[in-house]
Image: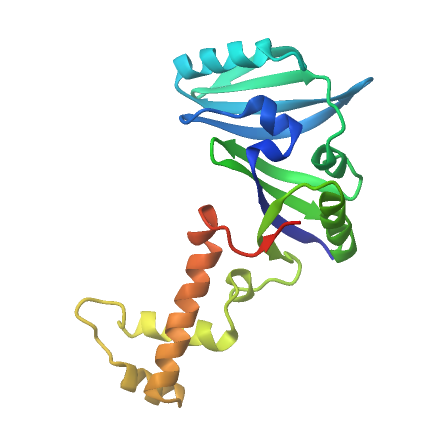
Length: 225
């Protein structure tokens, strides 16, 4: 059973985040950590204004922890770079480099970092969480999903009843302007009351927002020490 966990982490909560700390207008995407003889080198896509990038590059190279920072490629305005630095004790990096976790996606901005992590099971995910807690790494869980068992409604946290109500409302024109069907009529088709239909639709919409739009800015489900 595989588990996908999406988390957000403040920039100053781990050493690599402190070193990079992108200014407003630059976006960093972590490609992968490549093992080398004396540590790891991260490959990164950096997107943003070229002038900002040049200033950013000068600041990174001036950091005493950084040995080198150089560009590898440019594609569609994005720069592929790699960073050679001397990592110190870092709870998050140690947790990332565990064989129990794979970073599927990582994005950093001046507002912090978001990572999508792949674990082979719940035990591995719990061990990663405990490593972060033990090393005082604050993080927020945005979403936990099981891709092997998700279905059309479970993917967004919907119940089957909420999915049924939302689909019927959509098909019958409840969301049109003007509406083509009332809550009472939907309730008759579903065999429930007007109030029950209203609750299912509102709860379903709330789950969809939380699973798609809201997670981009939310600090919900905090798991911090």
